Amino acid sequence: MAEIKIVKATTLKEKPDVSKIGFGTHFTDHMFVMDYDKENGWHDARIVPHDKISIDPANATLHYGQAIFEGMKAYRQGNKAVIFRATDHLNRLNHSAKILDIPEIPFDVAHEGLLKLIDLDKDWIPTEKGQSLYIRPFVFATDEVLGVSVSKKYKFMIILSPVAAYYAHGFAPVKILVEDKYVRAVRGGLGAAKTPANYAASLHAGLVAHDIGFDQVLWLDGVDRKYIEEVGSMNILFKINGEIVSPSPQIQNSILDGITRRTVNQIAKSWGMNVVERRISIDEIIASQEDGRLEEVFGSGTAAVISPVGVLRYKDIDYTVGNGKIGEFAQKMYDYIEGLHIGEVKDTFGFIEVAGEY
Ligand code: COI
Image (cartoon, rainbow, N blue to C red; front, side):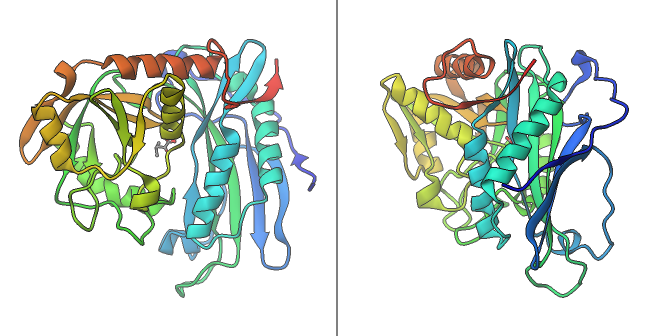
């Protein structure tokens, strides 16, 4: 195993006021870095003070976007600093790497670097309920050339940010606009990768939706423009007639295989519920809303955890889901997952990894 060099910050930053944490605006004292080139492969794994990096204006990522990222979270459990589903997130990073032709990250080095980084900055893990330390691993091309080609050099970094709820209004129903004009991704494209391009593709539609009072858009598939995909910052799930239904990343191949969505499905199965992954058309959702079978709609994601949906607008009609209130299932699932995060619910799934002790 490659040695991970550690250079500690000589002065530590002041921690933000817990009431003003927001999402992703404060960064901890250290970061993990590793470089790749053809001659040396992935090398020079190190933890150094969090600082600006210098890149050439010809940096390939700035021009052609060959980059991938992940999002996971660390929590305090008594005297332990723990990470939720770290292995799954690092594996998904490598899945995205494959799609973008980025050389596979050596799992063991990334994993050890992550645990060491969290241990070093564990005092940054917030203690407030609903807050956590967001972990952002990312990889980007570092070739300095304007020809369009797969880069020969990359940087892998992990930065950390103490965060509160993703939506400023916290755990409360959101208003979602079903998008029938713009598309996020198409089958055969990059939709299954966690890559900046998918987020760039979502910005304009998000802005338009915001301007008319919606929190997010719900993407439909880019080919038939009728199958439910995802929300972009989270996956989407439905409770229809007692069954938990969500779009299948495998069938659709243009949505992110959400790790929180998998968590929800695993937990729901352990509660004895029927869990189904399949194609779901927007017409089916509207029909099930109209005949009363649609009980709940909610999003799932690392940043958002569980986000109940109160209103869905499709083709200018607003559908109020479950009286616009937080659904019973979404509330129970949110409490259970938050309980797993902070150790109040016993982890029988093997989701929790200990990174350090206080
Ligand atoms: C996450 O849930 O970690 C995300 O990546 C969503 C968003 C903040 C980009």
